[in-house]
Length: 232
Image 1 (cartoon, rainbow, N blue to C red):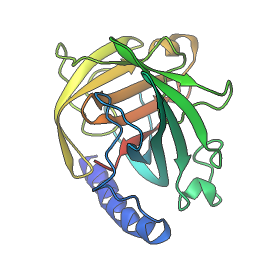
Image 2: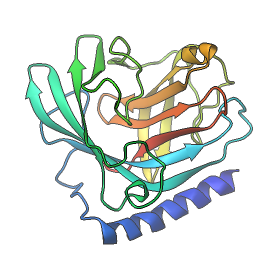
Image 3: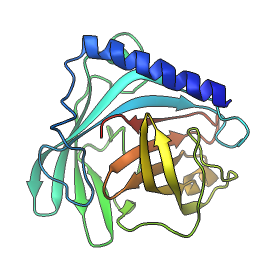
Image 4: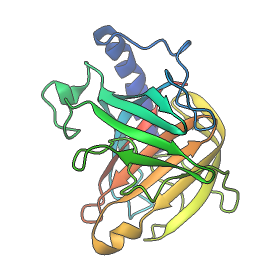
């Protein structure tokens, strides 16, 4: 399975070369990522779509990258509320005949609200919600502290933890993802909705790097999709 993972990364590098020819790329040297410590207008994060399977079976670690690129950009600020614009780039497959992402041609807007304890997402449309942040309601959100209680590994799209329908706060150290290494990342898993047949979700992040990975997966099929950060 590790060979498959490496093969996926190799494919991503080739995909990135192809995408640069079709899209006008963002200048990631001068455009900082969305930073949870100090969000500011003009910060941009760029992600590639991933698809995995069998979330309930730790032994099956296969996943693949798909040719969709998502951009999240802070465009306005009001006190501790940041308006985010989210859209797919022109070269994305879901804008060109594929159906990997719902409402692919829609540009979404939502607020990132920062408090003393968390950052929460306020979707501005009751039906079309962020494709990047999978929190089902505004009461949930990104905890703005480091997790240190439960170390895990994350070599593919899953953690090394056995599957459970629980809420878990854990962390991963020295994660290498798409040729970048992150010394410490929070891993926030909420599979409680799967007890009633809804989707579970995971967010991997730090206050410095922002959201590095997000994933949502079906209780019925075990299949999931998500996004990996490709700009830093």
